[in-house]
Amino acid sequence: MSPRSSNLPPSTDIKQASTEAPPSTVREGGKRRVQMADIARLAGVSASTVSRALSGSPLIPEATRERIAELARSLNYQVNVGAANLRKRDIQTVGIVILGDSMQTISDPFILNILGAVADALDERGMSLLLTRLNQERQGQMAAMVDSGQVAGLIVIGQLTWHDYLNELARRGIPMAVWGACLPDAFYSTVGGDNASGGYLATRHLLLQGARRIAFFGDTSHPEAGLRYQGYVRALGEAGLQPDPRLHQPFLFGDRRIRQVIDLWLDQKLDFDAIFASSDIAAISLIGALQERGLEVPRDVRVVGYDDITLSTYLHPSLTSVRQPTIVAGRALVELLFEAIAGQPRRTVMLPAELVVRDSTA
Image 1 (spheres, rainbow, N blue to C red):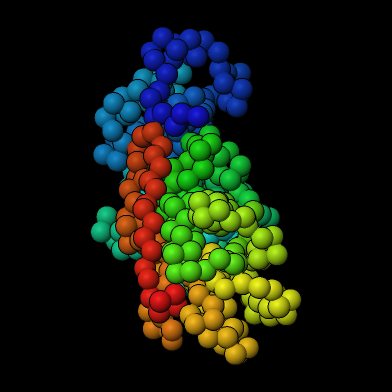
Image 2 (cartoon, rainbow, N blue to C red; image 1 turned 120 degrees about the vertical axis):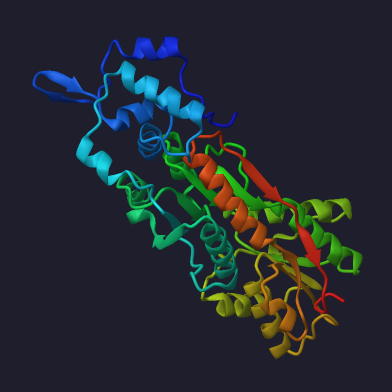
């Protein structure tokens, strides 16, 4: 599916559109009054982008400003002077949304790294951030934050089961950039690591170290973990091995029951010589549980994590992990958000995976 384009309809389409008032207009003195939301819908951008374009904001490319102005003229749009006065100063705040259906908390080391990188990139642009955590019951607040003028746009951390809803917001013209899996049918701009490659590198490394019974810890219903699992399966296949379903333990990022899940899994006394965990937090918990049962890492079991959080370096043994370049990711998220605010076509940035080898697999 091709990216959403920021190009507005050609002038011939604009004139045709002006012959019939949009259905969402309101009546005033027997006449239909065009709303800013109508222009935004017809232009395929957000209401905030229309507002900036009509006020001459330099954030919006000149060509886009001119075409929005032409569309407004063709619809006889009248600016609400009072509201325009309130909007004269561009909004200097960006909303950062942590999707709350995950058990991952804001204090998770990887989340903090991403937030820090985003905050630094916004600060360089003279912008501030508004941080919130939303669950499915409050998902409507995402659009409301932008529509109300509270924030200029959204940076969303994670996708979970929200992919369809994020696509819906993108179709409405809500400017946003999402950290997560780079899904082919996404209408929104995405920044994410090459998860499939990361899973492949981690598993291939374990195979080269002599491992043959490699367990996978991660919930494949999660887009990112699912891609990491694909890389895991690919590496096994190249080695002539098939994944053993008993060695796959579903586990959601940030689940506080992780130790209970690990202990129940270890109680089965399965035959394995390595573990690939889809997060560093899971890998660290696994190493602790293995050591308590008299299994040494890496002598008895080799362990690889994912994210390369700072703590990975200081563990004993230090943790081999697939690095997520959070500083680059934060800058890319901010850049893509400002492109969306300006009405430019969406882009996807996929960051390369890098395996950092340490003592847990040496």
